[in-house]
Image 1 (cartoon, rainbow, N blue to C red):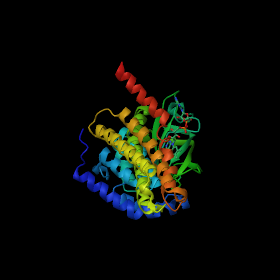
Image 2 (image 1 turned 30 degrees about the horizontal axis):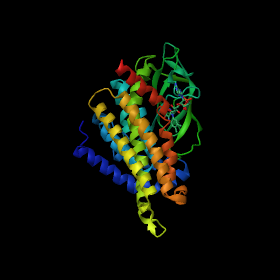
Image 3 (image 1 turned 90 degrees about the vertical axis):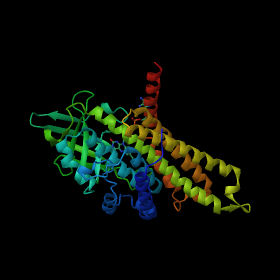
Length: 378
Ligand SMILES: Cc1cc2nc3c(=O)[nH]c(=O)nc-3n(C[C@H](O)[C@H](O)[C@H](O)COP(=O)(O)OP(=O)(O)OC[C@H]3O[C@@H](n4cnc5c(N)ncnc54)[C@H](O)[C@@H]3O)c2cc1C
């Protein structure tokens, strides 16, 4: 398989790298301290096409392929996990579901304002009682003959407090899901409790509460009770994005640790001379490279129109765990300074931990991978 990147892919990567290094990284700590996503960044992200990454040009997006999107999310992740996760949830989850399941009329209605960055999008699947078992939802969408009345509480929804548009997956019939597009301000839908998290402080996470929210048939995405097939497609592609974001977080830590190891002296020598420091740097560098290769292979398969479900799970599983390990190794390289907020490594470590949980935990990825292996072996 050829991983040589095209000129246009490298141009996008370098443009985003430059933006991430000059506009995002220098502010990441302040945004994290403030604990909210900087909404003033939206027009700038939109101008770079980062709010309509995979949206075809005809709907006002950048029309990028999956591999280019992986390059973009790695660059954002290296600078700031919160901004990267906000962009990933908006693109891979909310817009991703529309690209997979929305009708032509719905795409024309919903995609352009999202791609223009008029507002953020959010995707609401998880509930307080159902995470890994996504079909165990307790929310209900009741078909009244004139539309739907949707009630329930969605949990852990990225961008929920800020979004102007939600894709909501609700139950109805036992272990079936129906998806809806719902605009903010629709009576009966409102963000609920904002969560306080270990990391990703500038990424908004909140409940989304629906109480007798009336949604028209025109706003149902796909067929009634059939949304789970679309959800799986959304998550397959989303996992490539989370893998890329994780590689970025690990890389951000490694870049800091490399620079530090060369300049910090102890016992009269730069600590980079010490074998045990080199061992940590070598492990982080090798595992992040391996993770990137898995992410790019999954993305290349997706772009070639070939099956990539297990490849996306392998990429997400390995990259998220490699990122946590790399950030932890790099923190150790910085010694006591690694534990301070003066350097981004402790933030990357806290942010990386979520990548092992969101969009399917590592255990769920192992279930997907083992199922694929066993099917191939039979
Ligand atoms: C910061 C953040 C942002 C998020 N953003 C979104 C979002 O935008 N939209 C959205 O819908 N959701 C979102 N989520 C939810 C996320 O996808 C879930 O947290 C995740 O899927 C796990 O579900 P859970 O937390 O309910 O854990 P559970 O499913 O309750 O799992 C608990 C533990 O049991 C393990 N487990 C569960 N089932 C099995 C099994 N069969 N075999 C072995 N082990 C198992 C899990 O791996 C885990 O270790 C977000 C979560 C967080 C923390």
